[in-house]
Image (cartoon, rainbow, N blue to C red; front, side):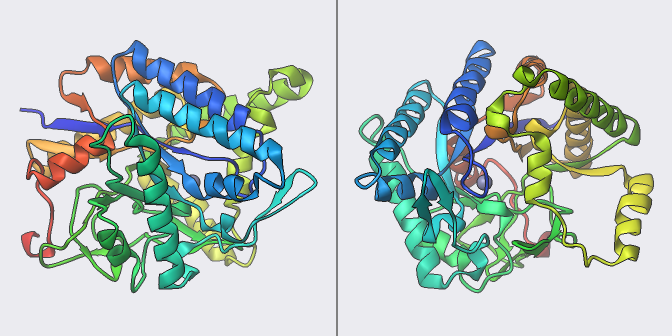
Length: 381
Ligand SMILES: [Zn+2]
């Protein structure tokens, strides 16, 4: 019998990493469009609302009244989405922590990785963010709670205090680990290539979520899914994107999303040039031949054929795990979705699949706590 896959459609809902972009184009409009897609196919999605941005808009709103209008519209979009049964959970980009606003532009001076903030600074951001979301949504549903966390730019491990801070804040599970991810950039330094578990829920070593603990811990990690796309589909996808780029140059009106392109995403994450030549040749040349191209399961970055490959990989790995029920967390970035037709086809397909149950992050937290899923310890290997 095929295992049942509990699939969470998760979206990181935010402006560009440097604070640029029009909130209407990068957040409010695409959120409503995505919610329309979910509603049309009877599924409920989850949005990781980046709260540091919103709290910063509120902080500056007296001096700059245009920010008040945007912060109010942000809350309206979140409440509207929540009111339709979709979930809202916690996402934090610490670069907003020392923001300045000048001539209508943000200058974000905080560190991009929360791992570089002190324990008390990190605690402050987590608690303020959680309290903000709960006070916003509890009037609509008194049972609402922040139960999950995804760290900005995936920064969760290693850290002497991050997981304990999440436990103190009442977070049930973290989803910041993504197998195979390694960033050595001007802003982010992290390496999850040797994570001990990159598919199933597990109890982490409390100081390093890349490692599986030998015992039950007060928090659970559920990795965000990743897979290896075939060379053929990856190449076709990139070729189509390149053609799209040429077309959009010819007809600039075709560019929506506030001018933000998928390439911007790559740019934000650009590797530093001092990566050794050998490393680059190895990762760009050799690994794709052996395993396919490493892809985060970020729907905004995939076309429909790659989404099908992703689903095939999820089913194959879930089957190999030999469990009856497996939770899977996907990624998405509303700000990067240019064409909703791929996601809509995928949602339509998944909503009819007999082996897939779409769940929200709150439902996953309840099921994880209630013992519906096996949660790994290293003793079980
Ligand atoms: Zn983010």
